[in-house]
Structures are given as structure tokens and as C-alpha cells.
Image 1 (cartoon, rainbow over the protein chains, first blue to last red):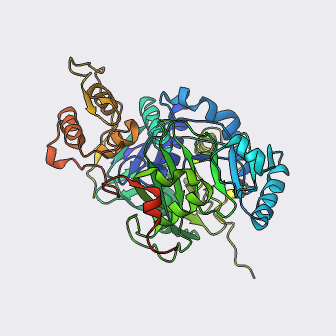
Image 2: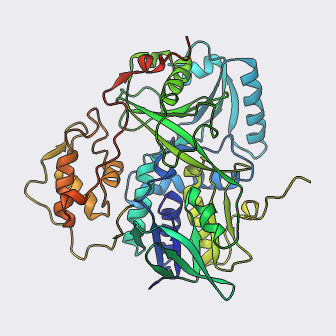
Image 3: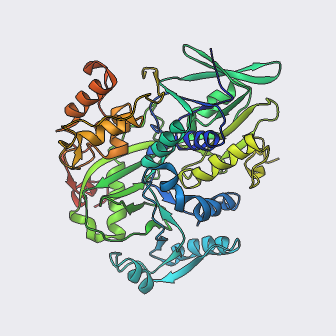
Length: 373
Length: 108
């Protein structure tokens, strides 16, 4: 039996971020990870760090992270997280696309975000490689991108240096409740005890929460990505489209990372493991070439796939569980958890250390899901 | 199922070796010393080392350096080579131009 003040289930970007901010506050924390560090969605995402096109509930976290945490994160962790704040362009090719973007812009401006519509010429000025078919875009100058893999491993490395303990290869199967309170977790082979348990296990969070009688309306959605060979620096913005057919950016070392979906998810991709499908990479390639004809002879060197833990309202659960004192859930990030991961770690640490997070997490409660009638 | 690995900090300081300058991953130009230091900093699996340093993420996709990295991990962590998993192989086996990849017969 191993004891800690806090157990975190899941060594992804969220779990490692929480571990970092707790360890920084001298909390004795133990992280249990089933595979290796960052093996799930934390290493399988496009690296977008954006505020634009987020649900208004997530906006305070995203704005706080972009303003106060991301710019200093590499220094804080001692690992280059490759954060670049060079803007986000969401491209449009027709009037229907423009309408989609106008709504996103109106939405963002309502909370004071520096988000605006720009025309085709202005897009070309910012990013000369776009097709002449692009007639406009939404542009958020304070958005950007980073490297999800070095961010996750950076949180891990720094947390470890600050005294957080990590054990990998430990698959948590159930929560242990004693006298109505959380008392620890059970893995395949061991029992670990702590008065506070945080479940940050992505998709697996649902089955783990189930063992305490808590269910979450979450499903598995596959996304795939492709990596190009190195290119000399071409453009630095994060790119998306109004049609949501692909997204991507150029990384620091020169490769482009492009992600996307075929439109058949989640119905055609319920495999147990994330395995790339024949139809996905070609479909993402066609989407990219439709906006960036330049890439036609650029080579793809690698593809990968991963699963999102998608909530029914596309907004995460970051919440204490009232029925089970000591249990905290941080999951269901629905494909956009990376950008807010530093804020989530910091706020959950405040919740534990100071009793209250400095930004309200009320909107992310686990019991917000109600039948429609 | 992955093996249970504790990630406790090493008690001793990192010790440099005379051959740390040797390049192990040719595509990304990553040295033995960088890999040894990454292991010292807690990157205990080949997938973690790959994600941390870009070892095996270049044009050859690790076909040249995987074995060498494996040997370094085995030595640094005192493991048997056969107990170390190599990073997940990724499609395509050779680089393919985007226009060829896009042409799978679905959209003509």
C-alpha cells in the first residue's frame, strides 16, 4: 500500500499539468498511468492553442492560459514547448463558410476577444500560400500553437523534479470508497490510498467514474493526422477551415502537422486501439490541397490516429463530485484540452490547496447533463 | 500490457561520457548524450524518448536508429534488450507525395 495526499489517475497533459502545479505547492502527489506518459490524446492532437471558436464556458480558461501561462511555460518547465503566438486563420471559400465564420467572430467579440473577419487579400498577405479560392477568413492574432508532446513530457519532467511521483504501467480499474468518501484506487495488482483522487484519464475516465456510480455522457471519436517532410519556414499561423475539413500548422523543425476527420466518425471508428484507416489520410490530403495547392509534391512521412474523449456538449468536466467527497474529475476535453491544459492544472491545484480556484469552474460540473424534457 | 515502472528521481547527478557526442539519430542529428540525458530526466520508454527529442521522427522513421536507441535505453536502465518495446511503426513505409496519397480513387 502506497500513500499520498493526492492520487492522479492518468499521466497525460492534464494529469501531468495538475501534478506539476500541486508539486509546486508542495503537495505529495502520485500519478498512476496505464501506458507511458502522454500516450493518449495528449500526444495525438494538432497542437492548437486557441481562444477563438471555443464554447463561451471555456473562454475564461483559454484567455487566462494564453495571457498568463503559455508565454512563460517553456521557462517554467525547463523544456521548450515550442509555443508560438502567431494567430489563427479559419479559411472560407464560399458564402456559406463566411456565414459560419461571422457567427464565430460575433461570439468571440462578445467576450472581448481580438477576433475579426478579413478578406481574401488580407489572408494572402498573412499567408501567401493559400489558394486563390479562399475569399476570406476569421483571424485571431493572439491564438497560436505549441508542441503537445514536449508540453506533456515537460509537465512530467518538472513535476518529477519538484517531488511528484509517477508510476507507469499501472492500470487503475476502480475507485475505492470507504464510509462514503474516496480512499484510493485499485489497479490490476495493487491498492493505492489517498484522501483525494483526481480522474484525468481521457476516455477511460468514464469506466473509472462508473465504479463510484457516476456516469458521464462521453463518447470516443477518432481523429487522424499526417506529418510532412521538413519545409523551409512558410507560414506561422495555426490554420483551420470553416468547413472543419482539416487543420494544421508548421512545427519549429519544419514539418507540417495536419489533422482531420473523414466525416464518418464516430460510427466507422470504434476500434479498441487507434489504428489509421485507409480512407482518412487521402481525405485529409484532398482537403489540404483544396486550400494549399503548393503541397501537392510535398511528401507525407508519417500518419497517426488517436481518440477524443468527446462530451455531449463538447465541453469538459472539471469538477468535484459531491456524492463522493475527495473525488475530482478532469476529463472529456473533447479534442481541445491541450490549449487550456496549463490553466486546468493550475486551477485544480488551487481548488485543492486554497479550497477555491481563482476562476470559477461551475460551468464544468459533472452533473450538468439533464434530459431535454 | 505495459510493465509497472516507478519513475523516481535518480540520486546521483548526470555523468557525461566521452562518446556522448556521437550522433545516433542521423535524420534529426541527435547525439548519444542527448538520449542519455533524456533518460536521466525521466524518459524511460522509446516512445517517450521519441516524443521528447524527435529521435526516429525524421525521413527514415527510426529504421536506422531504433536498435541503437534501444541499446542505450537497455544500458542506462539496466534492462534486457528484448524487454524494450520499439516506438509504434507509422504508415507510410516510405515518404509519399501528397498528390499521390490524395488519389485513392474516392474523388475523381
